[in-house]
Length: 86
Image (cartoon, rainbow, N blue to C red; front, side):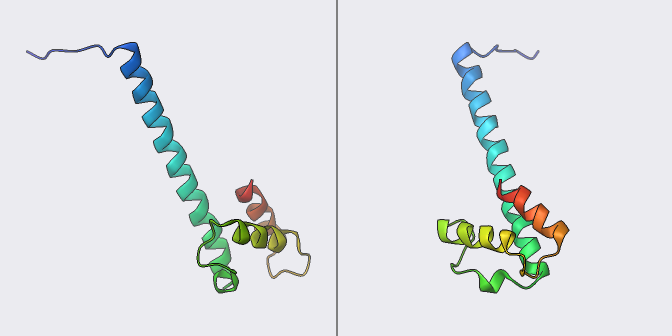
């Protein structure tokens, strides 16, 4: 026969916190991958001033790329990049 142990309030909060952290990390990873996909579509991943796109310098560069009217990104990808950077 199975025994069911009801978690205490403290354990329940710890479980919720762990689940929330996991969801945030998954969302962050998904967002980073989507940004990289936009950059790869235009072969811009190599123009990034840093090795990764998670640095402040890279974020500034992405903001400039998004705001520059002469960037190779089309309007839809620029809007998508703007949304992802938010």
